[in-house]
Length: 523
Image (spheres, rainbow, N blue to C red):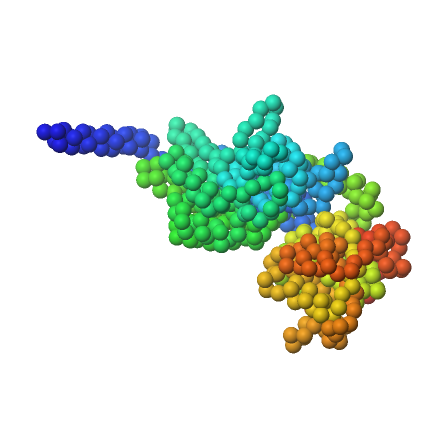
């Protein structure tokens, strides 16, 4: 009798649960649509490529057009925006901007959600906290926590108007529709554990995202990942969290669209040269989600939003004024590049380009005593092709960190070790990949000015002081060699205004000299 009663109770509960589900899914079954505008890895607020590509004011125009089409539209940025940029190195009211200009422009653009990129931790913890506090958008992070003064760790917080809020592993965004329906979008943030700043700790990226997914999967209709990870890591997540409806990613700087099982991964081009537009359709009765993703070029065919452009120009005017105190004239035209100068990260971190040769040749021009010039490709951070009229501002943006050059003495055997390590396959795609002037490898042998390097001879190399002090991965051993860092550039023919020892002065002086070496052009 008891077993029959228990069976009846179970049947009743199942029936009630079925009725409950039917009630939840009944009524207006009209498909619900919403749109997500995606950008990632944006370091420059103004258009690039001579004004032809990118520009946050154009992103704002696209966003407004999407909202006209569907009010349920949000804009997200998948990490990397407060650093690096030349503008971010300038001082404003006694403090470095450190991404202040970017947050201001993003606020004006109407960005809704971001996750941390690894470059967010380039700046000091205090500066990052200020950027978080200034932001009008929400930050999401499942695997990054701040390290506090007492050694404890905990999630970052945003402090604003006397209140504070925790930066959570996820956000749930509610869309409301005119017919009384609503939709809950879950967004989970996760960051590449690359920058090992002392102020932060990383949890295991995969487990934190999966844990966040498990917590919200029954509370959301649609769930996406907002990630700043390497594509292989995104694929790993897609394989194991098949319930995600889309992964919106960053980090690689090149647009891509991949699919792993049911999960699509999309990344746009860096510096808003393109944006992804994701149009979602959700059917309440079947709970089926479909996504149509369009990669949209952000170029001169799109008008600049006047409000955002006004904010951009405010900061551009500040930059142009501030660089005068550094001895530069931002608007001065240095040359005309009929052939674009190739400074895109995907190339400068794997091969020689006309722009990398321009920079390395300038080092030899500035220090004629050197036998060879060596440059860590991470010095170049513009990720762009420089076209048309090349100004001092372009050189400053391309080499935002500047920095002095050092003369380093070593034996031929030691020099070959540097060249082999710095150009190996293992070094490609990171900032420690070396660009070289004065030497080339032929038949697996390094030749210096056409002659094979002699193991026991002593050679002098000119290189950024950053590199000479062993601060690049796999090249730390350079720090042991004898080094001098002159106060001024060593070529007596350089005009006084550009003799200060800074790689940017070196490049500007070399261009003004007429660039006697033909190697700056494409080979």
